[in-house]
Image (spheres, rainbow, N blue to C red):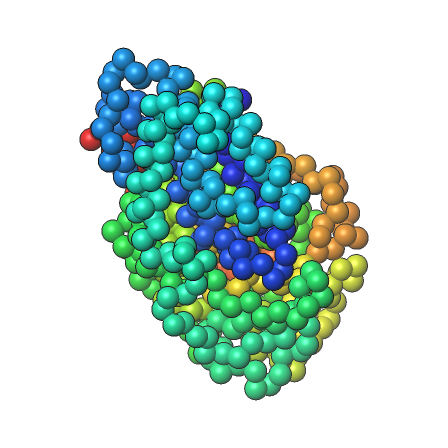
Length: 467
């Protein structure tokens, strides 16, 4: 297996395990979509910088040590430098000590075993390539620890953001006076998997201020046209469209909604696309040098997409469908999903709910623009450009019941994406099927992601070509 793919598998296990931390663990803050996107960017920037010391032309992103002599540009040296760099970045972003004993032991064993494949012993001798990997990690981490993400304080907000609306209890019909501004984001109160009432705060409202990889600022690609005004016909129309889609979901659309959900306990949307990249690496039999380049561009496109998307989310602070629909259709009978095993029924507008598990009804941040759309199209743009083709060819077969509705007969549904673009578009549409995004948030998010992906690829290509 390709060395980068092996390290990616460990990275994804670490990300997934964050979602399994105790619900009161402060380290769960490492597991939001933008935080994970940044962590992935850090790992593969560190890997690239270590590799670049053993390439004849590539320029580093942050590494300060000189290029190694040509005679040292060997595969074993590259592998040692890369592995040490990946290890250092991983334990910085996901320290073993944050995990419970069972996964901690497994994680430490995975790290040690992977290093041992290239003759590296944790705490042992440091041959020159290991020193190169360490220096690459030191330089990247020094930069990123001061990039405005506030990693030292587990990504706590630095801007003083406060929502204008009081929280809404999702299990109860929305009260008539529950919303101060129907066009703005509203926190939700619901029972988590431990049956405790929780009201998650807006994840990382400061993220638009994080230093990007290729963009000049987080606002470089900010949409110039705001989303629909609450006083417009378009606002009512977009809410009706979500309701119509939800009332007529097919089994395939329900599978699409859950396949792409990437919620708690998963690798999240940023990690999902590194898995797709691993498939492409194996499909195209890429060598180590090609894979390092691909993951530099891919990871940082996803990272920059997190910054650009969260800049828009904070700037527009836009309402989610569950808030808008309950406000607009209060007192009316509407067709909607009535819950697991109940299908579509006539329900009260103020009790409308999205096709989601009740323990995570809608992500805790604003709607515009869609993160899934931005992450996915940024990644698809890089994959398409790097491989020279939009061809993808990945399949997924649903072989387990749906989480939101285990009674739905879906185990014969097969999803297929002939192109990277079709996968990205479906990822965006999945949020409409799930009832947590409007159509406009998806479409504008796809456009934003394409711009971010092109910019990230251009900078990455300049770096590895020595331009």
